[in-house]
Each structure stands twice: as structure tokens, then as C-alpha cells.
Image 1 (cartoon, rainbow over the protein chains, first blue to last red):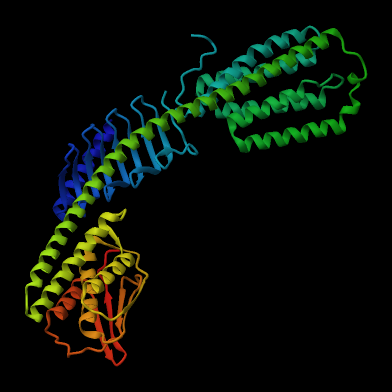
Image 2: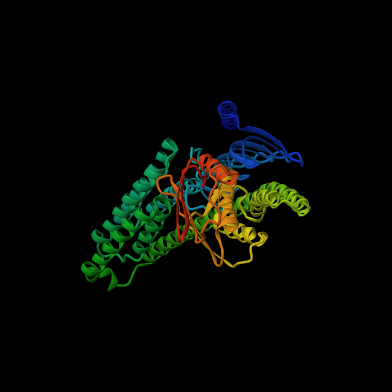
Length: 124
Length: 404
């Protein structure tokens, strides 16, 4: 939990300073209640930013054309979180998925699913 | 707390936990089983009793080591090496007893190696076993007199006990392997099902936002088309040919931008446009909307796949101006337009535009069209050279500021 808070804090600082230097930080309040704060291009989240969905889930990290792309942290409303690589809205590459139960998996993800060919870690 | 309960350890990997548990339970089981068997043999055959007692010492050392260090790997290596040496030495050096059970013990060692120490160690152990057994069969089996005489009751009973022991351990290994794999697979399946559902929700929300932006592009395109229609209606009432031409130029420019928005919402990407497809539609629309009656052949060779929305507007307006100029001033009988766009080379893009027409009137370098072309090239950080001869006009334009 401390790690998430620290990463959120670091990203927030990054957004704050890049905002001054690039003057491209915007806040978009979507109709349904979702909020995006970060870099925007072509009216879509592009660059570094944080999206908070009305459901309570949030993502902070790299965006491309409104999809999580690159490195980022996703925290779901139930407390599960993923820290790792994304490719157009789905987990692809190396990452760590931690479930609220304390179990966690660290390794490769393919098309949004645990690939299972590398290390699997479960706490309990 | 039962003696079979695994002691506390620091392993977190699912399979490592299973390996530690297996090492612990096997060592505990062998400690008791081998001690009891060595007692049984002590009263009938001292050599065999010593062998079993050695096995008991190995297993007991393993138990102590696991309690102290809480590491399974070194214990597993120790067990594999010691038991392998013990069983093979029994095969070779203990004469005149039937070695029915030794092959089973060797199979157990091989399975244990594969499970606890991995594929490579498993292969090595299996190779050693195969060599040792083959060697025994070839050089020692015929010298074993016990095969030629009947076994005593205690020998038969001892063999049965050993066989049962081995079958039990093999069964336990197989059960342990199946249970561990099944648990891991079940955890994987559950985790993936949950993750899949979570991803579906987020992607649905992402797509909703994309659709929203597509809708905005659609509305912008519709508004620009309304402007185009209003300009057309107004130009129909104008009598001056020169003013009408200015209106047509303005309509073409608005149409060029309107087409960008149309292509944006029709494509999968909202930040890039397929250049070839866009210019084909644009040039055909410009020809169709002009009042020119002669046929115009259009050839587009585009090696540039996509251009981003930052620079597509000036790039499109540039091509639109060139095409409009050709339509207005160049052709008399048969028109031909060639557009050649190269891919990036050292950060430079080349646009080669050629028509086969002859200018009906002299080019005015101060005309708005020419000034606009120069301004657009400047915006795209490029340069232009123009060649006119009896075969037509050729623009060679280099651009350095295209976001591709």
C-alpha cells in the first residue's frame, strides 16, 4: 500500500512539473463522472495522466489515444492493482498483479491475462 | 501441531511451497519407515539393516536441516546424492540378495529430482540411473546366486514391505504433483477470469470516450459542410466570375478540412489519418466539385502511411491548393495529375506534384493561392522548387515537420 501511495505521489509531482513546462496538462470531466487529469492530444488522453472512473477504479501512467499504453498502475475499485506494461488498454509485457487477498503474480502478461510461463507468486 | 505439519518458511512461490512441503513430508516419512525397516532386518540380515539404517540417518539429517535452515534445495541435493549412492552401492556390493526393490527406489529418486530440483537435474539423475542399472545388469546379474535359489520367508516378507513402501512413495509423489498442478491451474483460471472481467469494464469505458470524440468529429464535419453549402448558395447569386472563383477556392479549403474530420471519425485512430486514402478522396472531390469538363487522370503514389492530426491540416491544404491550381489554370484537353509522397528519409519527406498542363495565363507570384502555398510550406518547415516546361509543371517540395 505504501508503494502505491509513493508511486501516486511521484506521478502527481511529475504531472505537476511537466504541466508547468509543457503547459499541456488538462482536466477532462466526462459526462458519466469519470475524470482525467494529464496530458491531452487530439482531445484524447495522450502522454502521462491519471484517469479516475466513477466506479472508483483509477489508472495513472502512460496513455495513447485514450488507451493505457506503456507503463502504468491500475487500481480497481475492489483493491486489486496492476503495476506494469500496457498495450492499447490491456496488460501486455512484464508486470505485477496484486489481489486484495494478498496473493500476487509477477511475470509476463499476454493480451490482458497472466501468461504463466514465468514466475508465479502467491502469498498465502 | 502434527509432526507432518510443514515448519514455517520464507517461500512465497506456489511451486516452491509445494517443493518444501514434499521435502519435509518425505523426510519425515522415511525417517520413521526406514528406522522401522532397519529394526526388522536387524534380527535377520545385518548388511541390509545397516543399509536401511544409513537411509534413516540421511532422512533424519534432512529433517534437522529443514528445521534449522528452512531451505529445501540443499536438502534435496543431499538426499538425491546420498540415496543414489546408497542404492547403487547396494546393487553392486551386496551380493546374493535379490535386488527387486532397488529399481523402484531409483525411480523414486528420479521423480523426486524432477519435482524438487528441476528438469536439468532430473535428466542428469535419470542418465546416471540408466547407466548404473545397465552396468549392473551386464556385469553383475549373472553372478547373483540368490536368483538361482528359493527365497526364505523373511526375505519374501522384507521384499514385500520394501515394495509396498516404494509404491506408497511413488503414489504420494504422483498425487502431490497432480494436486500442486491442479491448484496452480485453478488459481490461474480464477485470476484470469477476474482480470478478464475487470479489463472488459475498463475497455468499455475507454471505448465510450472514443465514440464520444468520434461524435464530436462528426458534428464538426457536419458544421463545415453546412458552411460549404451556405457558401455555394451564396456564390450562385454572384455574377462576377472573379468573386465566384474566390468563393470556389474558399469552399475547397473548407471541404479539405471537413474531409479530415470525416476520415478521423471513420478510421480506428483518432489521431492519425491514412494519407493515401485521404488524398485519393480529396482529389476526386476537388475534381468532381469543379466545373471542368475534360477528363483528368490521377495517379497517387504514397509511401507515407499516416500523418498525425497536428500537421495534416496544412499538409492537406497544400495538396488541395496545388490540385485546385491545376484544375483552374493548367488543363486544356486531357489532364494528368501525379502525386508522389515519399516515406521519411533522415527526417525529410518529399512531395512531388506534377501536372501535364500549360498555364493559360501568367502566374502571379502575389496571388493568394501562391502565398498560401508558401505559408503552408513554411509552417511544415520545408522548401519548394518549381519547374515549368512544355510537358507541364512540377513542384518538388521537401517537408521536415510532419508528425507521422
